[in-house]
Image (cartoon, rainbow, N blue to C red):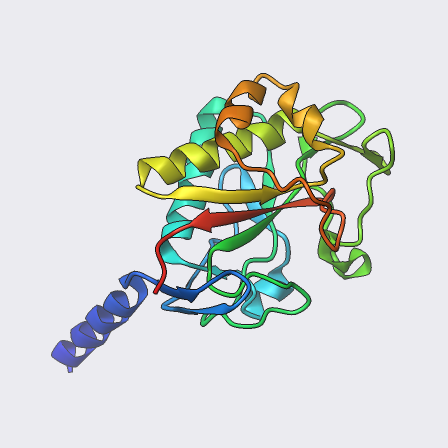
Amino acid sequence: MKFICILLVLISFSSHSAESICYGTTSSGSLKNGVKLPSSGENFEGYSTVARIAGRTYVHSAVRNIVIGAYKRLEILEPNKLYKYAETGFEEGGQFKPHKTHRNGLSVDFMTPVVNKQGISVHLPTHPLNKFGYNIEFDKTDKYDDYSIDYVALAAHIVTLHKEAKKLGFELWRVIFDPKLQPKLLKTKYGSYLKANIQFSKKRSWVRHDEHYHVDFLVPCK
């Protein structure tokens, strides 16, 4: 009986530690051995427990390593900043409504970092009444209720995602963020790095992408 228990543990560990395999593209693909992003960490959290239970927070194992590694870097680089990830994809990939991409484990949405009236980094509220954050719209002064966009935190996150991806032998394909807001990212202390290394989508997407930014990772797929 003891042997059987040990065997079951080993099988379980093996299945969870297996590397993911992605197929096709972000807009027409699938995923094998997808892994969940952790629900929270020292400086980050997921956007919804309900969505997590529903299986909407799976990614390619390489993407998971990049995302978690970047959050660890940010604990040192920007120790007072908080971050929140949003939609990723299903365990086996495939169509992921209402998104047009997120189909092969290489796409991750991140909620835009914000500060409160006191200038303190806080989490953007995400709940069913605002479509888990996706229904939020920032005004012309970059404000929503008592929250303001934290461009420094956002720029730092994109930079660390890129550096962590490179460290692990991968790349970022593109970042989708409202083109009208992108110049403000380039004015931060991270602007020169972003300009030299990050490909931002210059066309406005079918949704604005101000309350969140979409990152596609470049990982070899079959």
